[in-house]
Amino acid sequence: MCCLQSHGPSFGVPTGRRDGRISSLTLANDLPDVNDPIEVLKSKFHAKGLSTKDLVLLTAGAHTIGTSACFFMPQRLYNFNGHNDTDPSINPKFLQRLKLICPLGGSSFQRLHLDWSSQFQFDDHILRNILNGFAVLASDAQLVEDGTTKRFLQSYAGGYGIGKSSFGKDFAAAMVRMTNIQPKTGPNGEIRKACHKVNS
Image (cartoon, rainbow, N blue to C red; front, side):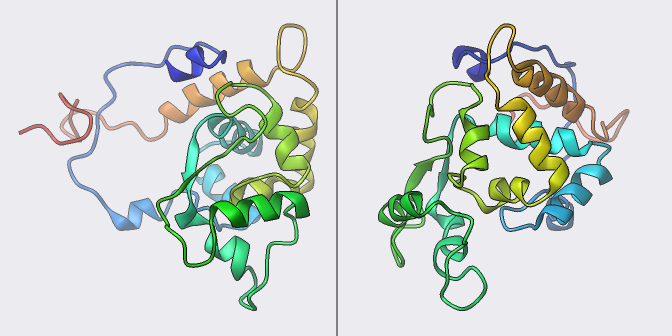
């Protein structure tokens, strides 16, 4: 719903998906991490049956609206290679803004928008931000470090809308593919009555 309200694509997903009854740190480690290098990101997506194109679509599409926390920023802003340095891929003008919002030793709960051009609208600005060094998260910036992912970024960055880039339509299709990753069947899991807790 938030995607549609933000002028993004509308898409239906299969209903009745079962949720697990337990949480697992081991399984959580299968998820992409903000500090993963591009090859690890690609590997994690491929392990779930998703393509490199899906990696670009789902990463950029999910980050065209919403916020992150300064909790994820210290390594990128203040200790990128372990020498009190900064990620050199960050546009210098943007770096100063990020450091103002997330100062060293500041609150890790401070929020910052993931898409500085149009943070309340689903569009292709996030793609150009990533290409031009205005990515907030290190994992977003990694999409420029690989020839294939960079080409996908460039191909979608031409303009979102009717007759322009197919970014919205392709993002919707990738979201549906993601909902079909390893579905639980039969007695494995449950359909929750409240999404934030297991059924009693």
